[in-house]
Image 1 (cartoon, helix red, strand yellow):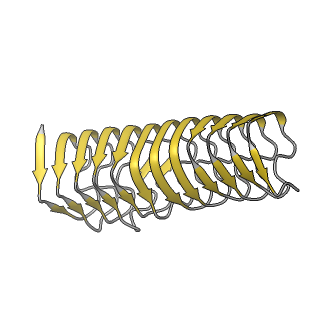
Image 2 (cartoon, one colour):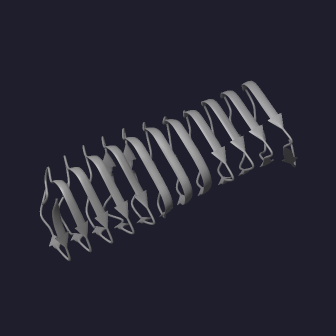
Image 3 (cartoon, one colour):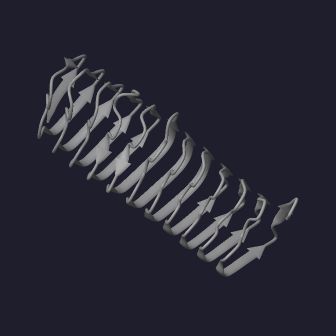
Length: 226
C-alpha cells in the first residue's frame, strides 16, 4: 500500500493507473484525469479541483472529501465506488458507472448526475439538479432530499424510502418503481411508467399519474388532485 499525505498534484493524469493507495489530505489541482484507471484507492479529506478525476477506476472509497465545481464529469465508467460524508459541487458526476454507494453526501449541483448507471445505494443524501438518475437501474434510496426536475427519468427497478422530491416530471418512463413513506411535489408525476407502487406517500401533482400501466396506491394522500 502506498501512502500519500498532505500532497498537491497538478497536471494531466498525475496519478494515472495508481493502485493500492491511501490518499489523505491531498489536493488534485488543475489537470485532467488525475486518477484515471486507478484501482483499490482510498481517499480521505481530499479535494478534486479539475475534470474527470475518476474515470475507468475500480474499488474506490471516498470519505470527507470535496469535488469542486470544475471536477465535472468526474466519475465515468467506474465500478465499485462508495462516497460518504462528502460535498459534491460538480454536475454530470456519474455516467455508466456501477456498484455505487452514496452516504451522507451533499450534491449542490446534481444536474445530469447518475446517468446510465446501475446497482446504486443512496442513504441520507441531499441533491439539487435536473435529470438526476436518468436511465439508471437497480436503485435503492433511503432519505434522499432532492430538488430538481425529471428525477429518475427512464429508471428501472427503483425502491425509495423516507424521501422528498420537489420535481416536475418525476419518474417518467420508468419500470418497476416502489416508493414508501415519501413526499412528491411536482406536476406531471410518473407519466408513461409501468408498475408504479406508492405506499404511505403524500403527493401534490397537477395532472400527475397519467398513462401508467399497473398503478398501485396504498394509504396515500393526494393534495389538490386535478
